[in-house]
Length: 172
Image 1 (cartoon, rainbow, N blue to C red):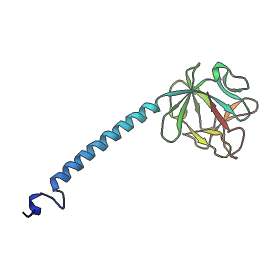
Image 2: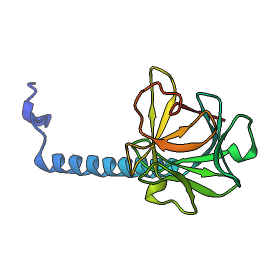
Image 3: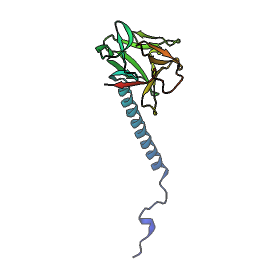
Image 4: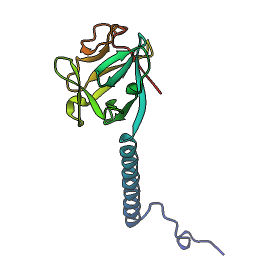
């Protein structure tokens, strides 16, 4: 007996209807995966991390009744809630005790606001050479958060990458 090729139903190409079904199934799967990924990222973006911000000179960023200062000793007012609000290293810094947000204006002055405003959104830049971070205003990119040696907190224009005024660390 001879085996004929036509009886085995072997196709050299897949029928067009089968291709359409596979493309539709693959598209639905990819849309589901993309939506679940976006949902997972949006959940992680809204969580707060309680941290302290320390300058290269050893001063803690403190937001208390006396205002925004840099103190050598740790206090409960140095505990800050940092929340990511965007994908490009955009954060907000909220004082846990005072329940207010840190913001910067066009002159570089640091002040407190009750709600998250566009001036309260800051960006972080990691300096690979020094291992420190610098924090700058998203609305005014030339203004960086600076903690001076006397403890005053203000915004300044960053001129050197290793300047101790702008070098900050996040600690727990």
